[in-house]
Length: 411
Image (cartoon, rainbow, N blue to C red; front, side):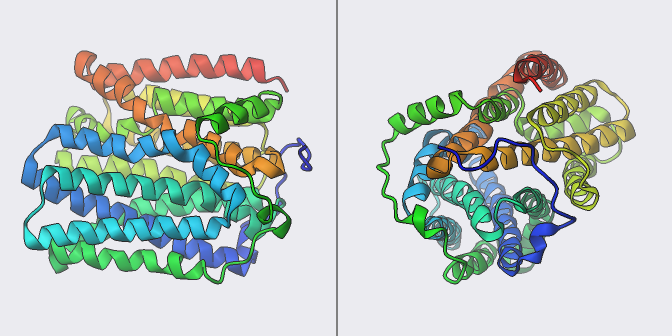
């Protein structure tokens, strides 16, 4: 039984979640942890590429990052229904620290082998899945349902802030400390989240006292059945799965190719500008949505925003003019954060309270886990027909599927 009404997400004021001191502490530690995540990528990918020059290992890095979300998101959500999510997040932070320290050890001793790199990539991927779903559940405990949409948007902004500053910080750390000592130093950025969680507010005792069994694949099937009778949850899970499977963030990996094809000056600078435009659009979206508070959170609104995202990426795939490409990527970032945060808030607010972790886990399985396959729709197809055609066709197909979902979702 769901004690929460199946209603649209209501605005609760500009930056409402920031009124909560515990949420502000969570926000700051989340930015640092996300930054550390990206710093580790920058340093480890650079050293591993210099060591092995292996495209296969690069592909494995993508799979190891997203497959844990596909395989374990619902199970981790089930654990968060049964146990304190703060402790699960701390396990994730410890795995992040283990991965960074492990890279540092092998870099210092110059003993890194292919299987060492693969193991550390898997540890990093498992750390992510232990972090994200319980952290989303923790937001509910920190701010409550009224300010949850604000908390979700601001956390998404924190994620993009980490993505924006992580590569720059990683580059500075590599230049000043070197990759070996730098990636060990990076472990310090995970500590604020790890330590703050010892004092974070305790969740609802009535939920924490329940003891649900975690049943693996059966949990996925039962959760799918549970949301099948709730149109909001079904529509938003389909939205997450479609956008991730068809496009996800696979076009980021192809950005050097787009930068070179656009032929605007130094491809390295063009590459950085294109990535920054996408992230800057997302950050602006979070600020704008928090400041204005006028966009009504409904399933149909979220789907329409996703349609606009796919249209912006379709335009980016086709346009040959660099300034226009920057503008379209900026819009894509804006629309992506808008529909993702709206969908996530709708899922959390409408999930049955006793299986909220499993429902959010299923949403993450669709929204993050399915990204493992977007490398096929964008990357593998791009090798066959060109990256512009693969992204353009994927975006066009996605827009058509989303319009069908829009019609089916009703008012």
